[in-house]
Length: 262
Image (cartoon, rainbow, N blue to C red; front, side, top):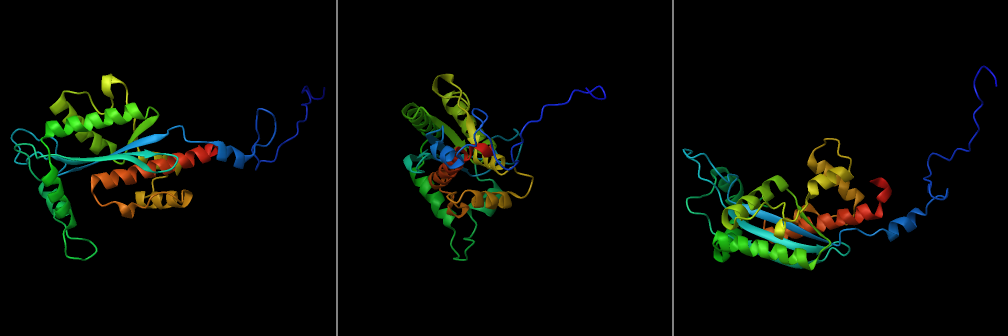
């Protein structure tokens, strides 16, 4: 004893730049760890919608008409391969008394091709929706039947979107209005259905620090070379759902390969 303090037993320090396996004191084979890690989710359902405005409801005396849900795209993507194994598009007739929001019409549907062709490609897409449109009740029954079928067929599956508050807000309003069914947060039989957002997941992976979303996605693209490019989106909801599903699958594969980074 010296100065009233017990001399501490010296322990060997490990280099700070090397990870240690706490179970046996050995450095892990990181390549082996990553190659053996597989995504826990085997499939994802991706959902995307198109509307003719932002207003699901408006005040009674408002001069603005409520908008309508116009088309829904859904796909099932196998996570490990990124392949689409099922897909469907369902379009809806406008609800009675509902119409285009002026801003949505001028800035979106009626907008000219940004590439300078002089055409209005979304008008053509809108015409496709109109030609296949179903009464809302019929359309929403088809939607929930398809979701129920895919979730029953693929038990280890999760549901993804790229703008949850908007897309699932509309879908919840419609399944409640026309089918008397609980929100998108519940499967058939009122079982809990977790909903996941690609944007939120990407911010977690990149340790988002508040930079513009475009910069964050560019940074994530460098981290994940097989991340789908945003340029493939064309506002056909079935195509955009494919993009969302393959984006989710790429991020899940990356997370499985890099467990030490999470």
